[in-house]
Length: 156
Image (cartoon, rainbow, N blue to C red; front, side, top):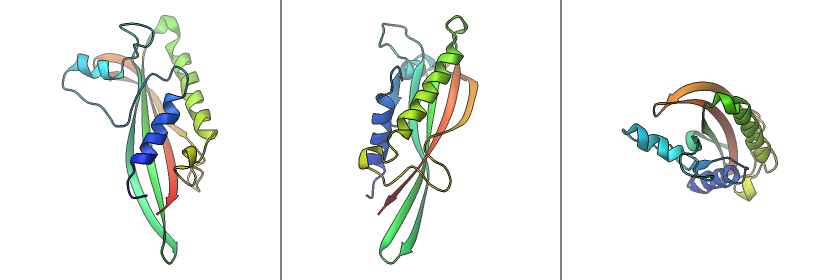
């Protein structure tokens, strides 16, 4: 496999399958216009003006090694950022924590991403990891932001 696209698509498919995951982008969406930026991540599945609830996927590193002649192991680190607008009356922090846990469990259930990779269980980490969970201003909206990390390994 020479392209990261099948892995990125499998990560998106897994995220999309999580209930109430919101909008999932295969890359980080950006706009100079704050309203447009928010619209990229706004979950309108229950109607107009829904909350910010969305994710994007980024490949942040790729390492290659060769344990034997003619065989390459490719180890890739992915960051998956999730956003949820803060709504105190709806206990959005607890809702977002539950969503993060559901995402982690979805990746635990299939460490081969449907056969696209050999494993997401490596010496560095076993499955999806929560790196940070914090508050950020996102397109002018106060949001929870979780940064998840996934290390994948496949043979080339």
